[in-house]
Image (cartoon, rainbow, N blue to C red; front, side):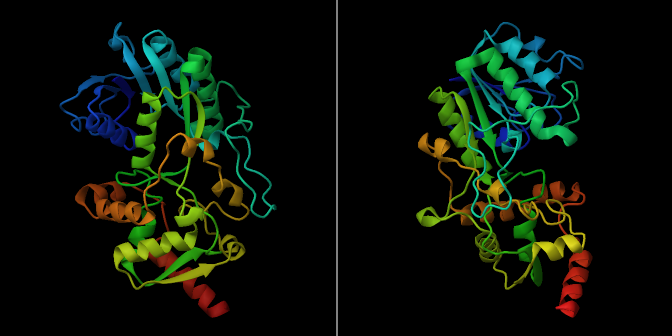
Length: 346
């Protein structure tokens, strides 16, 4: 298979290209050459900006053809529209990486056991169709990008909606915080309840499914979330932190703090306590993945994801990524002060 990858050297793209190469496929990369430009030195790499307002990357593709295009870095509808227009007659299918954040809502927060949206649920809409503010309108922009892909490619469009993507080379530090924190030891502040559900997907499992789906010419939208514990039990906070303790060989103690107490103390969901989306967010951690599982999604054991992420985080490359992050996770002194606060107030 001849594959064109838009991006391909940062996180998901890095693992997708590795999977393509391992399977013997012919790969061309189009990117700006900013993230690890020497990573795939043996592959054809076209350096250029795909945004027609900033560069001529799309023009450099010429009149060539590929069996599939993987778009792992599309965030702005205008840019995705340009890519689709340039490739509509020159690729067999277009695989667009969207997000579960593209959904309009995630169910009633007060409903115990409420499920998140399936693939046919309504998507978010932009109030300002001209906005390109990704930080403020990430989900709605992804939904608009999806619409652009479907408009051009129809039944040749495959839309991938991952949840949080984790694993080695994660540039966000959100998942990586937890194995590193457990490895540091001591008393660890964690959001209660311990049995609350949690969803994420190992980047390697996502890449493997995308490759298999492209080969099978899958079309439509798929939620790519996981993992699932043995016997179909859902992932929980306690399972994650136990796996982190085991991987780190840590004797740390988990202190579970009620969500209301965390909010009252000004603890920021998602940033100060990575992966935690705050109170009443359970449906956002129960997004159905039956459609992807029916088409071959397999999620590796949690212990493997945690072990490999921790091992990478301790390498010079992992430490270099961590050094560039700001505001992800509780600083040690902040965590200690919070724990002391609850120790004295009960």
